[in-house]
Image (cartoon, rainbow over all chains, first blue to last red; front, side, top):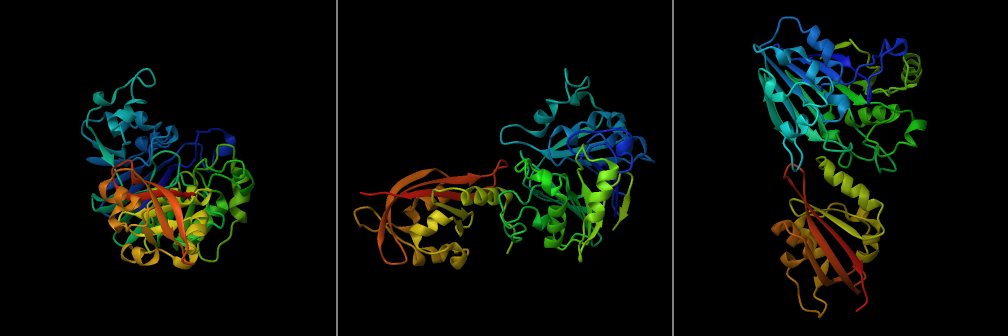
Length: 274
Length: 130
């Protein structure tokens, strides 16, 4: 299994010379299974460049949406395979207690916010996604809710004995005085247990977090502590704050340390092999 | 021990910040958490008790009706909320670990996730003078 980062920014896309290396596009990760299966994790603005660089068009693409905040869906209408009738695109995402995924997505993918309606797309199937386990093209996908405002999922992808966990928006320390407290009472621990690669929210510094408790995101140090708690092998920082420049991220990420987890700054275009 | 559903984690975090005594029961009827104000009434710290399995609950916590008549364990509000998936309120007496009976009012409600999963039940109770 391989993973490539196409969008690592959180909350709002930010282009410019100060975000060239870590990337200014919002969340989108390409995952290729050992048998070629293509899964896309989230459809932030980064999915645009994935669509442009997809190579030989696959017959099927599965897009898993962690939640429906704008930075995770705003690229969807710009993903060129959606307009190719030869490619079947399956979009999986959370319904709410009162609305299915189609109704929720239509709020954005319809005029006046967007000119194209979902029903006009050639070969797209929408699926309400809930917690549980399913198989997508030979990859076992486990979905579970995680602490973040709204109904939000993390994903655990297992393929040929390797495990990738993606928790883009996550505040496991919310309300816990002595985080990391224990695995039973910490959000996301089952999803991330023993992951070979953990792509995890690292939006704030410790100082910034004090004024942003409850906003649904982690600090860099919380991401490291979480990775250690679950026994992950590699941590990729993700969902970087739009105010954090490449230079700033270098400084913060270089200062992180773990005796047990390899810490990698999530840079756009990086590919990881599991 | 398996990770609790995130909705239960958030409920526990909420309960930790409440002055009202709160109990959380999982979908299998196990008492998975009660907060510090609840500890003061039942007389047992949760850290000492740990998760209490459904079959052990009646042995640890004795309840009766305000008039002293027995209350079947199936008729306790939190169990009704769990089993019937409906809210329930009742006056009760509970015997704490010192053997003293305390009058309480209990309001319980089922906890159902947005996707329909039964998570368990929540009970808020408080001590009253009758």
